[in-house]
Image (tube, rainbow, N blue to C red; front, top):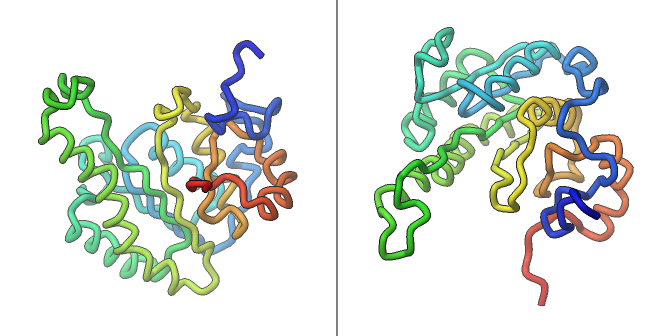
Length: 229
């Protein structure tokens, strides 16, 4: 059907119920978080990160920690941080521990998009430093923050114990609405959904439709990346 992404993108899993703007059911004011509830957002100065922070605040989170390398953009925060630096990640973990003593949700949103002129060149023309910088933030950064904060997530016995890794839909050729993305995150993590652990999710999906597919997702082990042989 014209205008509908192909199935291999994964974006049509709840078709025809897809969203590019957030439905009223996902409004932060309609989400009731348990108390206490602490969330750490890596890369929270703008776009999805900043909007997620505001959404969690509106939903009643008792503690929100946001980080960024851009101190000016985070003008109301006390420090900036490079999550690709393991020592910085540990500092973040220590700060969350000393301030709140718990952590319910970690959102790994910190990432960069290459602006290097060689990014789309042929292999022999690509700038290696650009590749290294992108990997340091987009891959090593997620690893560092997860490694540093996972012990506190697990230690919080009554917590949500949730890690959300944000990535781009560029790999499938389709984009997600930022406003809807942050509300989708809030709608997913407000309660434990162990059956979604380790699975692919799209911010365009309808959350209620997704929950209706729970049995099929679990029994057929859907929404996972793997090699079938």
